[in-house]
Length: 109
Image (cartoon, rainbow, N blue to C red):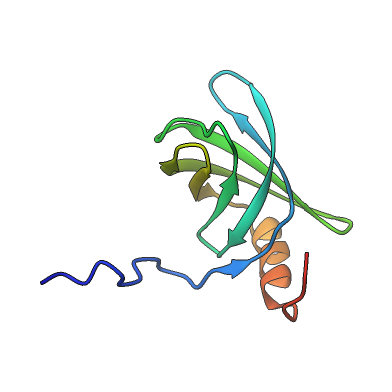
């Protein structure tokens, strides 16, 4: 029997609730949201009306005085709850920013 609880992610996730802006690349539509968790390969964004799976987006996350920017694709949608994003293009400078956030001691965001 298949174990459906097996972790399929390629990188560990960390809970970080931060302000987020998601922009649909094709339409330029902007949505304000918040993050729920992060890894080096993607994040989960809380949104009541998630963007459809497969959509290319630009995500902008703010933590203290730093901003993380990346291109991503919506890889799954939880209707009424949010969506999982896989980063598709992250510049080295932005990845360094994300690595700093992920290495910080755990605390309430």
